[in-house]
Image (cartoon, rainbow, N blue to C red; front, side, top):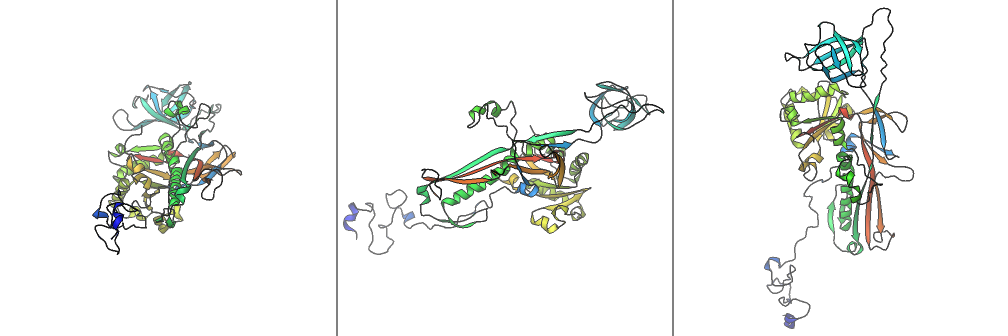
Length: 481
């Protein structure tokens, strides 16, 4: 036995080394706290080399790569113009129920125009319209005379109007109308996104390996670079999440009024934020809550879904659209389609995917046709992951038109075709800021400073362009505030 080792030397007082490889009560090592004999730990632990993927694929990026494109940007701002409607119409016009319509300032109604005047909540409870011709016009009013009725008493006090033509007497001068086509201008600004991973030189020299497989497709035995790889994956997710969730800084918001309290910002270096996907749809698109579908959701029934189709008819009527949904809403759509004939999904033309149904299904899409529209739906992991939007449960999905739009680019000075949804990143011949990565310090091959560590830096500068947002639909569980 060990003799004097009981009272000193390299072993604890309670440990008696054995001359043979025997598992005895007196020769085990307690590596928990260094004192006492712990029979529960008399053997060294069995260590699994392989890392357990308990959450599966944890990344949520890929949504924008599926529906849009990325293009370089040289300026602090991207500006584009979108066409306005071709025909002249006004909603919510006040009528005195006689002959006077109160119009908004700047209207383009002139004498001799012929109008359709209608009210969906008219006297008697059923929709009705009157055809009228315009007499005298002021900056805010138009005197109109119905062709069939004596006045507008058959309609309500709030009406909608649109111009359908004009009528002039023989031998009279031409129209005084001079309607100049107009456009609406939109813009967005890129934001700078940063992240960093750091590890000391001593830790990089530590011998300890774990067999890993990452979402990036790499596998093997890594230790300290494993964390760097996950930092990169998380940053790539941030690149997408930042332009999906981005908000413009309101002048009365806390950021705008306290910029000097945020590191790096001041009265002269101010952050403007950026308009993300959700914010753009809330501002310029169509937002539906569960209450709009009878308290359930868009997929609760074909009649409820037809509400969306009717709204799309009033906008650009883009034939092909993609639905990115959370799990509950996607299942509700499945149930809805199962309750109608099989032709509801069998007649879809997969034009978006080179007319290949197999290609669409490989991307996780299933399609159905309703009316004149094709829809491709899939789960959006971002809305299901508990560590992202899945933990909020307020957004049920988005409808995004497929294809491209023609807009006027203020920088190029010409009409261009772009995907309705695309990312612009800052780049020039001197610097490409789409996704920058560099190493500093004195470890890992870097020799930029005397810091005994390796620092891996990540940077990007980008924004999202949501063009023709009137064709997008956001599904929410409750009204947007």
